[in-house]
Image (spheres, helix red, strand yellow):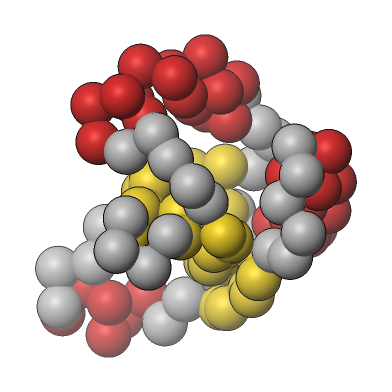
Length: 100
């Protein structure tokens, strides 16, 4: 079984290509996190929010990452981080072409 971590937080930018350039080093670092299978980066400029959808191989890895990432974002001045962990129903997700 795998686990989704859903994270979002207030974000003032940069957006789009500028975000890609600014966050490339962080993305490489995240790719090395224990238990991480993949991440989809999310951004909503109109709402002033960013975050991601992560797939982890186990709950302890997802929980450890959420704790570390929340502390990192808080140190960047982000006052509130929403994070939720969900078990993935792989059979139904595969029927709907989910990348699991």
